[in-house]
Image 1 (spheres, rainbow, N blue to C red):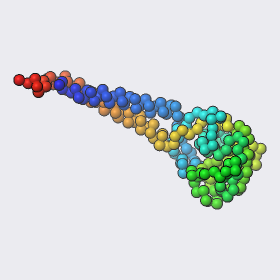
Image 2 (image 1 turned 90 degrees about the horizontal axis):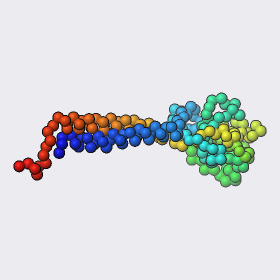
Image 3 (image 1 turned 90 degrees about the vertical axis):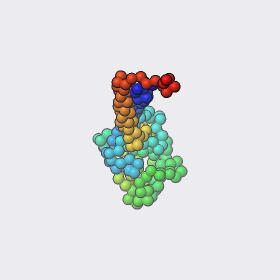
Length: 217
């Protein structure tokens, strides 16, 4: 066996794998742009500094429970975008009573809500019918969220147009970390493959060909 053959095989295996990992990480970040959370309105799911991967979304594709990135000039908010959860879509009847929500007469389970029994988080009771083509959005941290409840008296009952939701969160902080880890890990694997391949080439050039044991007289 020629010296360094095993190293060369390992290098030829690892180097392409590294390239694939790097490409996958970059493609993930291109397909799902990253956004950094600025405030605490979506805790505990997403906190300040978390990076979220988002995907483009059509208004007709938005569903209850989606976390979307919206522009909210109707709320007097210039900071863009806001991260909020979709509680209701066009035609939904939403009632908030004692901090508990119901949609179309059915209690809404909200395991993502921070401190659901906090009386301060509950705010005043309300009842809203969402106009067609609009969304009723709330933050998960109800005690510290600027959302539809603060504008329930406006002509649109605090709702925003569905077209204001430009993107939907496709993955939370772990997804963003995974994309970064793919690029970093791919670079490590690529360098390891190149190093092994180079070492195998040097060994092959430096050493004599070794005959298999069965050929030795």
